[in-house]
Image: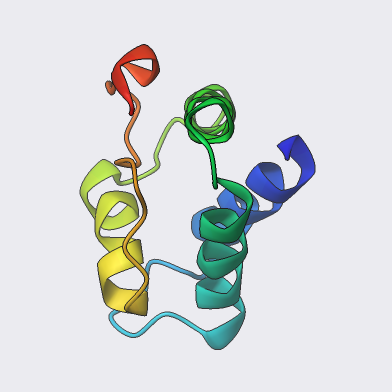
Amino acid sequence: MKGVVAAILLALAVSCLEAAPAPACCQGVTKLKALAATTSDRRLACNCMKQAASHFQNIDDDAVGNLPKKCGTPLPFPINKEVDCSRIP
C-alpha cells in the first residue's frame, strides 16, 4: 500500500494537478480505491497519504483533494493533510 500511495503522491507533485489529469494519474486513484476495500485498508491508505504528503511542502491541498472527482473516481476518504484517519468508516 505504501508504495502505491508514494507513487500517487509523486505523480501529484509532478503532473496530476492539471485541469485535466493525465490517464496515469487517474489510474493511480482507481488503484488506490480498489486497495481501500475495508475500514482498516482505508485508514491505512489515509495515514499513508498524510505521511507522504507531509514531505511535499508546496502541494496544493485543494487540487489534491479534487483529483478523485476530476478522475470520476470518488474515494471513500478525503485526501488532505488535516483529516482524522481514525474516523474513516
